Image (cartoon, rainbow, N blue to C red; front, top):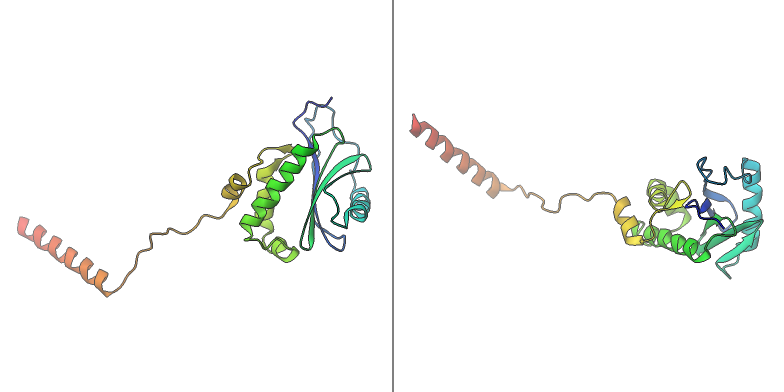
Length: 185
C-alpha cells in the first residue's frame, strides 16, 4: 500500500493531432520508494505519449490503465489534458484534481481553453498547474481557490477622474491653504 503524498508522475497536454503542447514529469528524490525508473528519457516520454494518445484520442472515457500507469484524461476542444500516476493511486482523487485544474483554467482563460489560448497564456497555465500540483503532490482541488491565486491583480477600481472641475477645486484648496499660512505670520 502506498501511503505517500507523491501521487502524480506526469502532467501532459496534447493537441488533437497527438503533438505535445506541454508536459511536466515529476521525479521527486524524496519519494519513499525512490525515483521512478520509467519515463526518464525524452525518447521514452515521446513513445509513451504517442501510445497514450492512440488509446485516448476518442473522447469515450476518462480513466484508463496504460503501460503500467493510471491515466486520467479530459478532452477540451482541441486539447487533451492528462494526469499520470501509479496504478495503485485513488482514481477519484486524481480525477478530482484534473477537474479542478481544468475548471480553474476555464475561469482564467475565460472559457478559451484551446491550443492557441493555452500557448498565449502559458504563464497562467503553468502557475495554475503549480498551484494544483507541487512536485507530484496534489496541493489544491478547489478550482476557485486555484484561479484566485493565479489571476493577475486588477487595477484599482477607484479610478481618479481628472477633469477641469477637480483641477479647479485642487487649485482653490491650495490657494486657501496658502492664505491661512500667510495669515499665521
